[in-house]
Image 1 (spheres, rainbow, N blue to C red):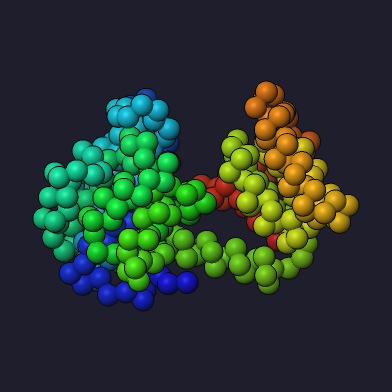
Image 2: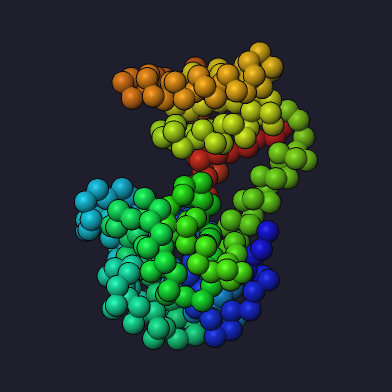
Length: 289
């Protein structure tokens, strides 16, 4: 696993995929900046090494191009205060004007690009869009753990255009290290708690966990909880579980809203899980049970 500690950033521009999908109130003020604070060590590492930083992220779920409520311009002042510098803002994430701003960026400066999802090509994993983003910098850093499982242009496709000049930031590196430690060396039993309404994006995670965890709890779809538990206790083989899960996603879940969980967590535990989820991960591992 290559991290930013293995790269010399002096005189280089680093394009960082961060997860700044933070909650905003009606006045467009950030109500929880946990994700922004988590990315600060990565950003400061590059700035202290005499490099410059270009930040790119998504915010919310815009449907048809630009929507003011999802603009990253609302985050500029807050990020500037956290970094103690004046963060520059680009009104788009690609285009001639944005390329010019990137080229003029000096060592120690930070440029925040506009919401990636204002372009449908981002979620589509469009290679041309990814290539245009890659032309803004010398080095690519993925530090958005919460979106790393998606094959979007800025999280997966873009890495192909940087050769060896790509790495993980501190958020990604720490999350991966901790997950590997728990799954491979953690004290048993291990309980996996899965959250998030988009079950389709959890299929890969579910399959990976089937032979690694002892118990599970699904916050949105308790039927998945039952299936995973049956598989982890060898009642059902993983291949059968995968087929049934896909059937549920295609036939049942599109027609029926999520039902109440089979288990109601105590308020204290809900708060503990919420605090962990604030790090951008949809998956929390608790060990021991």
